[in-house]
Structures are given as C-alpha cells and as structure tokens.
Length: 228
Image: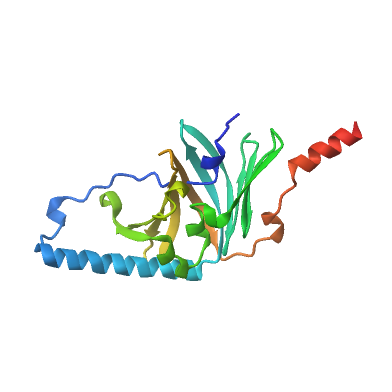
C-alpha cells in the first residue's frame, strides 16, 4: 500500500523527454539581438499562459503522481477555478486530496485524519488562481526547457515565503499555437520533488459541486464507536 508524506501528496512534475536541438538548427545571433528575441519569446509565451488561465475554467484528466522514494500512484484529477481541485486515487492509496476553493484537505482514511491548509499557502495556488495572479506569485516563463520544442514552463516561488516550496507548471503548444496543461512539479522546503503528469484531459466541462466535498473519516470513526 503506497503512503505519501502530507507535504508531497498534493503536488506534482512533467517527465520531460529529451528531444535535443542541434546547434545547426539554431541561428547564431549577436548577444544583444539574441537577448531581445528571447525576451520577446518569453513575453509571448507568458501571454499564452494568461490566455489559457482565462479560458480554461475547469478540467478533468487522468493523472500519474511520482513522489520521493519512487512511489507512484494514479487516479482522476478534477480542477475548477478559482481554488478547487480533487485527486481521486484509483489504486490502494487510502488518501483523498480535495479543495473547496479556500481550504486544501488531505484526507487519510487509514488513520482517520484530515490535514488542512489554506489554498493560498500551497504551491497549487498558481494552478488554481487566475491569470492576474501570476505576477503576484513571482512567476517567470521558460521557453523550450531542456531544448524541448513546443513546451513552455512556468516557474513560481514566493521570495518572502520560501517555506511554501516552488512549483513548475508545464504546457505543451498544440498545432494551432494554443497551450495545453501537461504536468507540474513541486519542490518542497526540504528539496523533495513530487511530479504529476496528466493525460486524456477534458476542459471546460461542468463538474458536480459534490466533488469539492468529502466525508470526514473522523466523524465515521465516532459513528462506528457508537454503533458498537
């Protein structure tokens, strides 16, 4: 049975395939011109990320989570802005992660415990906020990270609250130049990385309000004791 530390289970990263770009394919530019081109590319990519955040209000997808120590879990992800997310694990992981828009809950059914954080105090706030929030989160953009074409990375860290960890969100550009969310990675204050990759994504669909609620295992335990 897979077990995950609470600080790691609510986060995720993109397992990049190394698709190299050869020097022959790269036009050599003077240093100043190259810097201007790079800045323009990053600005254009940032605008595309803002467009994504403004137009994709909800999604559901399959996810694979890779946690420190080589632990892997899978399940279904639901997201609705602002602030709502749910990780339903499909294997034997006795965990539910769900946010109602304000509070992120880590529900451990095995030990009948619920751990809570304000969404704004977690790296996931970058995913769950709006486009206007990106600047406030100290976000910066990287185009073609690792030389991988058609991929854009959004790095975010609060310089005044480094204990919250850092998050890198990865988008892939489709054939019409729009971005799709493919994964994200969180590095916590201890330097541990948790990776989440998503697939079979459906966007802007109606999601039931019941997805943002959960049955408190602490209440279940009390009722079981009364029955006995």
